[in-house]
Length: 436
Image (cartoon, rainbow, N blue to C red; front, side):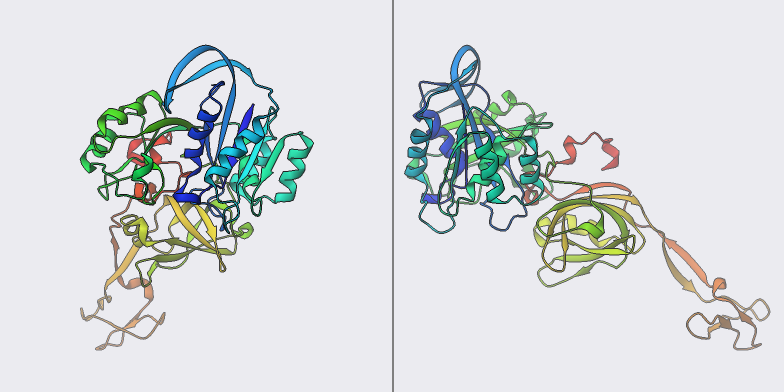
């Protein structure tokens, strides 16, 4: 039996993943038949919750214990077994949601889907890359005879159904720890150096510490129940956090299978076909010098096939903006990021420089071959003339110099503190280390 849930970020700073631990407690007569799933969806949707993430539980009657993946009043194990087919799952699950989600509060639109079937994969593909309509989602759920309930605008059904449709081609893990109820909203006691030590010990970890900006990336900035979350490709390795981070002790913890760090939201697109709310991977040529506006944001234009899009590196990307500032007209690049607004703007997540243009500067006027004197310009594109003997020469006789670019071809990415959940870090790319 699957239980999928989305859009419960409201009551007392609640977060959806915390409700997973409450659901596990509610259905303690069943076992988990797989890792609970944390599925991030389209990050550009304006009406999303904080991380635009939905969760999925698979419960049933287990036969063989496999491994410990969490602790919620008791150790939580993964088992192999058969899914349950009970009829009272929905009212029990809804009771948990009702306890924590203020469904009558504007902006809180929980969605709950329960059943033994799963929607087709195209629902997830559209939910992570484009915009899904609620009516279409309901049609799919009805066709599969899945039980569902939505509060408020029912928009949470879109995320719940999309998450349930996820069939991973690429996946990662996140171990999430939770605070005692009386500490919610209080400052988190997490030692900066402990996080750095942990990150350096994780061979398969990512996005946990920013070694460029020297900031931790595991603790949220919101007053939610999460103490910290540690991400990586090896789930058992992440348990090091439970002993390495020695500050505030978590009340409970759970490891999730996730689509974080996979770039599932990105699709190769033509600049002429870009629309708001999508994510894109586009190639083109820089056609305007980068310009800095108030607040430290940087903008420039990229063109291909007669079409142009504005690209942006916003202030939170910090040192990444230094790379953008070194681009010049003629550079051939590839951009990955989300599309927003009118005019359309691509918010850069990653950059690949395919070819650097030569940066050439004039270092002096030509010298007259007869008088040995420096010649004077006769105007734009009009050539040069010797002031003494009146000898004339063309524009191609000027003295030029190629300026070193202080930039290399290859990959660049925004720092850890500015990365989206879905954005795939270069650490997970199969590229040579010297190329990024």
